[in-house]
Image (cartoon, rainbow, N blue to C red; front, side, top):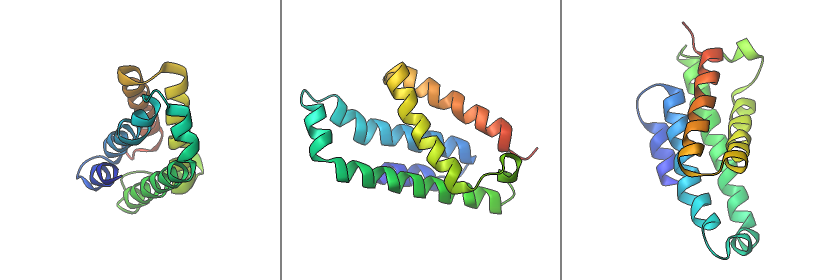
Length: 125
C-alpha cells in the first residue's frame, strides 16, 4: 500500500496518479496472491486483509479525486457523483478488467483506457 500512497501523492494529473496507484495495487498485492499455486487458499486466508486493502485504496483514491475537484481540475458534478462513488467504481472496474482481460499488459491497457474515458468526462477544459 506504500506504493499506492506514493503514486497518489506524486505531482501531476489526478488520473495519471490514480492509474499508477491502481496498477501498483494490482501488481503489488493482488498479483502476488493470484500467481501463487495456492492463490485461492491465500485469498480465503487473507480475505480481511484484502478487503481492508481495497477499502484503503477506495478511500485514498476518493481523497485524490476530492483534492482534484477542490483545486478545480475536475468536475464531479458533470456525472452527478461524489469522489467516493467514483473511487468505488474505479476499484470495482479494475477487478472487472482483470477478470475479463487478465493481468499484465492487458490490465494496464484496460485501466489506461478507463482513465482516459473518465478524464474525458470529468476534466475541466
